[in-house]
Image (tube, rainbow, N blue to C red; front, side, top):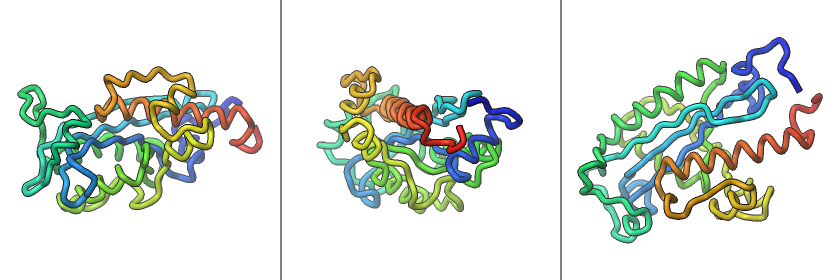
Length: 213
């Protein structure tokens, strides 16, 4: 399928009913989005090539300073490998980090003619819950993301490959995955993006969308 009289940007708006898929991963100080700190966030913006296939366009990441009163559990730091006192970590205040991450997302929504972004993540409601809680804490007036809809690659990986764990789904999809680099927000976001693009593009190849291809 060639995109004939349309730009790939405007075609993107039609693929997901006016929503721009943006892949996100967060690393946190626990499981409670209201009490535990948001420590890292990464976002990958996707684009569509001339054949209508999704691919990675840009990636962004921020290390975040725990908000005042936030709980950071030792077990969470052990799991993620984050060292809060690493001098090279250079964290930013939560609201500042989110606003900087949101700027290119809002810009891409405008460029593509979409109405807003929709979050793509692995176990997506976890990431969306932390982002929504941080938005409320920081009094950010309008999130670029749909407040509750999302694409969950855990579900999609289970459907496509019978695997719901990110590393195993990537392996089943033929995507390289290094467990030593996992649980970095940027690394996990890129791998989630590769998995999502692979599933969406394969569905197109099988004739699932667009219906007239």
